[in-house]
Image (cartoon, rainbow, N blue to C red; front, top):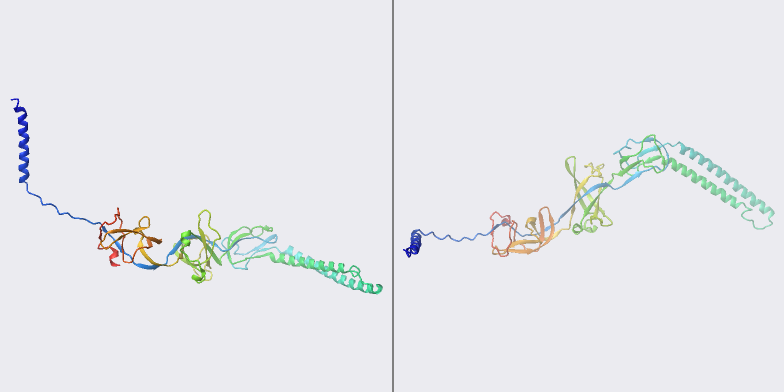
Length: 385
């Protein structure tokens, strides 16, 4: 009985193994699945060499070419102002903007004219007395040379100086009278009016802030990289580099043509950029009737860059980190290449370093492994190029 206790479990285990073996042999065999090797599908672009002239984009604010504080050169009460002398008022060069009371200056002219007449009479008298003195000296001198004092030459010189001074005072009085009529030094507009009819103004008081409208300037900041893509040689741009400007005015996108006038004299210490100064003639459309390029308007600018030859245009997404692209060899296997990025703009990149006809992968890849074989999508845009 003692032996049966450990023999029975062994017999049960052996029976289970035998039953499993019999059932396994009775089960029909499943054919082994054929191995399939799936290759990643990618979009490609066939590299084509071409030429490209980039447009360097930047932004700036319109400012007048000239702006001044209008100040009087004489004091007095304002007795007349032009209808244009108001905030935003437009005027032409030479237009009278303000008149100051002229009566004090007319009185000064009359007094100066009287002084001139007195000085002329004194001079005539001194000339006559000099002639008499010379005659008297000849009568009594016995042939001796006369001194300047005996001939009244110092007195004559004094009379001439007094006449010159009186005439200068008259010219000054006439100039002051002319300055009571304050005119516009250039065609422009009144930015801020600071005085009005009936007010007494003194020398140096600011009457208004004026700015010119014959030309406007836009300062366009450029980085050192952007500057390297622009040809500033006047001989290469027919004397002036043309710049296209854009802005929204009244809900409509407008454009203006400008010319490079100069560059700023130094690099900005804070932003480390250099400003190109573009000039637009007749910004308010007075002569050509175009849309006004208003002072203070924010504008976008397109500057033609240097043309690049033998470059390849690719989508910017095809440019991998480290300035690399993923290409395919003749067996459709991945090969990465280092390239020179000449320019990037609006989702495009222009590169050098890939032979014409080379397929460049444009689709995203999670992992790039050299030598991986891929399948080119039949709908890939690169197949038709």
